[in-house]
Length: 128
Image 1 (cartoon, one colour):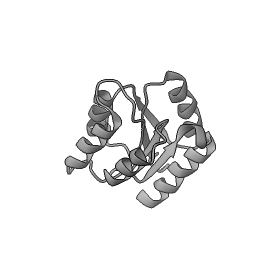
Image 2 (cartoon, helix red, strand yellow):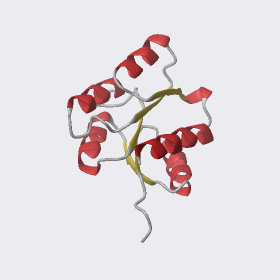
Image 3 (cartoon, one colour):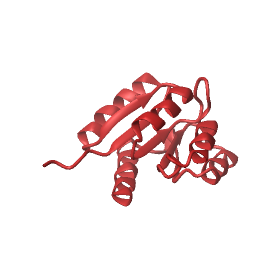
Image 4 (cartoon, helix red, strand yellow):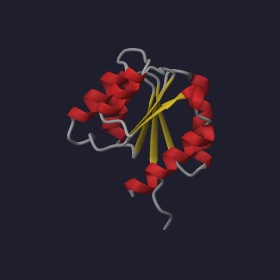
């Protein structure tokens, strides 16, 4: 029996970024799910119950901060670890994201694709 792949949900409106991460995380052995806006992201969190969430903050419909707030309010999904992956580089945004319950706050231009995959792998080990 092969072990069940861990699911990573990426909530990101940039199609190119989703594709790059889909390829990289699938190669790393994860099941990859994606959502293109905050509302779809919340729906997929509830229906798919991913193991890890990669969350952008600047999203159509519902922004990433509000997704995080809703996620933490729902006792069924509040323990799913979230990595914020955003272009927002303000200290206030970082503090807010972490205070709302994100495990990690990564700034897109400052972090490589491999770094993000490594963060996901580290979290995956902690959540098994």
